[in-house]
Length: 128
Image (tube, rainbow, N blue to C red; front, top):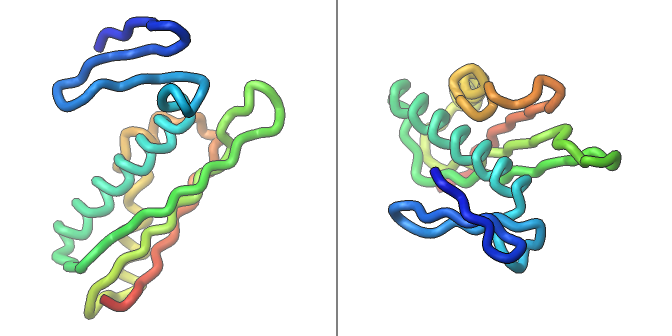
């Protein structure tokens, strides 16, 4: 990847779209937003692969992710909470929680985080 500074942003071209990084959300993605998005994307991909391997079918899946940053500069990420809301019939909470516990050891992004960042996962079953 090659990034170019344009005004107060950093930009790159990807095969499917351009990416603009900025300290101002009006001008582009903040770096912390990209990190949180990477955690969400990696976690969701790993979770759905685990569900497929375990032949657990579902109708829909949403992921709510909340990030907490330290009050002290440079405001590092201290905690990430991931709540998977999964809908479908015949879903078993214990099986989903077992699959959830496999995410951290199989997610490249979570494995790359500072060990001081607490990552908490939860799964909620809703009716389809």
